[in-house]
Length: 120
Image (cartoon, rainbow, N blue to C red; front, side):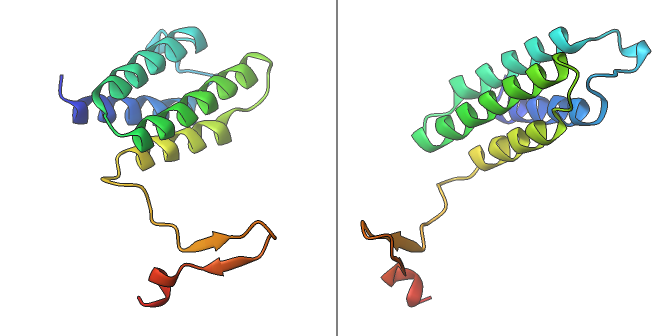
């Protein structure tokens, strides 16, 4: 399956879980364990299809957020915000290249604008 299809499936299942977890519609015959397993499968397929270290890092961040969200749901808490953050990481991983840094922080703690960004 094409990488774009795995991205779409991953995004769709994250949005589904943002809206329904942990109280899924009865007619969907699903639960936290099934959903988490499916998300992990889709995420692994996306990670296997990307080459960039930046993209892999973003997907690893998403995986941590997803795992934390489902742990929160299991303990009776709300993990929605964590799933929303995971979705943002997944979206960021689709970028062609990482965003440019427009500042530099020195060892003394002083932050300066990057020379290249001043010219724009």
